[in-house]
Length: 249
Image (tube, rainbow, N blue to C red):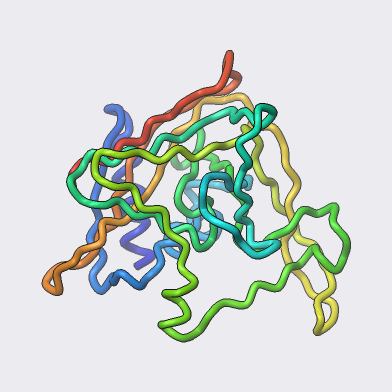
């Protein structure tokens, strides 16, 4: 499955020169109960991919209430919380578009500057189950147990579903997450993990990629990933809107 993902990334980058493009990659064996997060976790994938290096990212949007330290932090709609960038995920097909946010928005939306093999990724949304470096030792390495049984996994799933013709706005504050190795305390004793610090996004032009899932209702077909691209640049005169339109597969 990793090989399929890398092929899709390479193909999308090759197509991006001609403007916004979309690619569908059929994943044999994908079911409605599966999560797309693991295969789209950019920092983990990038560590094995010499074409894209990783800085690090935070999540916003309406992903629901998450456990402390899970990396999913919904933004409250206040006048002071004006997003630097709004990613508008638009579904122009006649079937639902599904985003798995079990691990936050970080595996779903990411960006990079430059062109492979010299591209450099930024992480705009927090990695799952990570904490800020400045917190107390007992909180720096959060423990996030995951359900093991199929029924429990399905019950715990967090999804954003965009109906045909509708769109979903995901806000980003314009700061990236930079990770470093650290240590902390858990009930079992000292442990090692990663923690983050936030920095302003470096000035540059960025390619933005978002990936969703078209879930099939037929036993004769597999669900499909669908990825599209857009662009953004910094510095900017004001808030930006990056439209990421998912056409019919």
